[in-house]
Length: 385
Image (tube, rainbow, N blue to C red; front, side):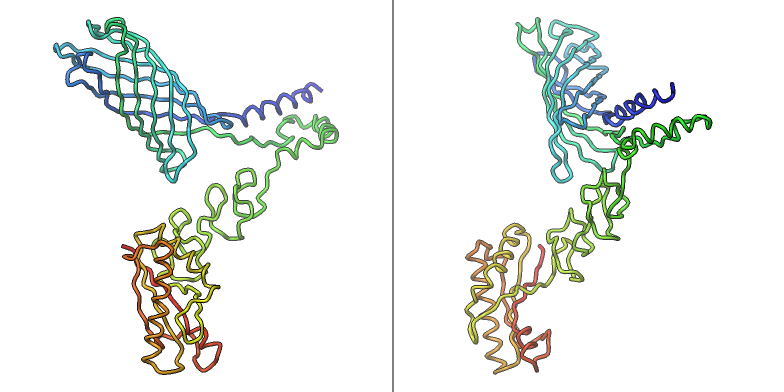
């Protein structure tokens, strides 16, 4: 029965393990820009740093311990000194923006000077700073940081001595927040006491269910980690269980400017169709655009306004009914109508050009009414600068 009493304690220990914080260790190198009255040669010196941050899984604010070290700092007089700073502070990590995770920090510490002068002494300081981390793997990231420090000074008429530190380094992250799963058999090393464990299973049947994890969409990412729990079977997913190429055009979502292209459409390196039908319709034998085409033109105008590094050629086509010369002129007038509408919606004129191709390049059989309707079309041909 004593072993039965151990079960609640082991369960509690497992819950504590699930709240384990992620640790970040950042070795840094940098340069200290010193205030002029400190009499430091060239008003600056290089330094080495080490920052250790403990990230909470439930808060954006994390404690940080740091040490900055400089050796051979030269005064204007020619004398050398060592400067060691130790600090403690709080780091606020903002939500990631694209590939960058910005942060801000505030704290304080103590500066020790090995060779004190009439302008430099030991003392406490406060600091504030900002920076960003640029991850390049799950556990490593580049770290850039700017830090301002104000040291309380008795030598400088009670004013603060100012230092600006610029640093760069590498951040190593480790530790996880995953629950350790176990079976009741792990709690019963002696075979003769299995019967006692069976009693626990019968009296507390809900406990095992607390630690069951599944993969409902069969993407190899367990439900507890899966942000996108309904991806299609066979889809390639990232570490969060989300489809990395939702429109299957070969361009990852993070780089895809056109994430909803029709399957099997030929796209460029931005994931955008090189040629796309605009689904614009006109009055019979006229270049007047019908009202139902407004939404399609507006969507294309929004894309061009957002991506000004693209230009587009609007191309008009007709079926083969009528005079070829007249049809070519009509197709150009219809393409011009689309261009004028795009300009009216804010697209820059330099992004637009026009061409009428008449009966050329049919995409359907002109011998049927349905085929001729498909051939009477407007296409947009994208070019990236």
